[in-house]
Length: 83
Image (cartoon, rainbow, N blue to C red; front, side, top):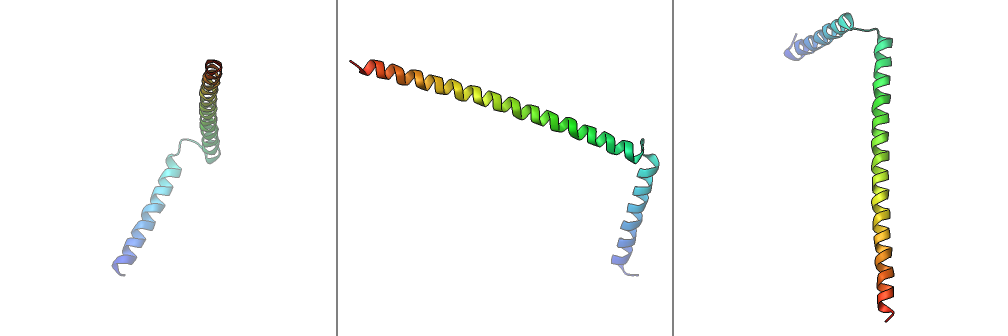
């Protein structure tokens, strides 16, 4: 057997041992693990959504504030230039 073949057998054997070890020492069944992952995924999705909503609200407040300031400035200039 050549060196590449030996390496391939070693990699496959290592992967098989790792997979078997992971299955044997896993704290929960596959179903429970998938449920936990889905729960954490949904929690993360909700956090990201909340963060995006907060950023949108803050952005809209700033835009409204700048628009109000701009309108006030325009009104002031109109009144000032009526001389």
